[in-house]
Amino acid sequence: MAESFFFGDPFRRLFWSPLVLAGSSSPAAMDWVETPSSHIFKIDVPGFGREDVKVQLEEGNVLSIRAEGSAAAAKEEQHKEAVWHVAERGKGSFSRQIALPDNVRADHIKAQVENGVLTVVVPKEPIPSKPKPRTIAVSSKL
Image (cartoon, rainbow, N blue to C red):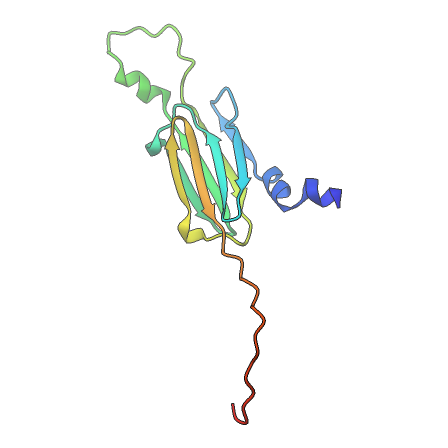
């Protein structure tokens, strides 16, 4: 029983969802919260804007999250006469893939970036309600 609690479906999916970092000094930390109506993912994406982050649903219910920024583009925005002495804050890039459970409503996934946090809300299929007890009329013909 305890084994399924610690290594059940959500944890197995999380451990099998690789985080790939390139040119970044710290990993993109993620929280995954399940509510009765949805799965909510919060991923730290400091320095990335809405246009830098791509969220896609791929085959097999895999949520793919990618962010790419360009330190060169940030440098070009500055004055041409400026001399750079240190450039450690380049945006870099990262990608992450998360295998979603089967009971999600893929056509209703929403994502937003605000204050350096990407929030992805993946609604769940409603759980079918149990039929209420009732009397079924019996007739001589169907």
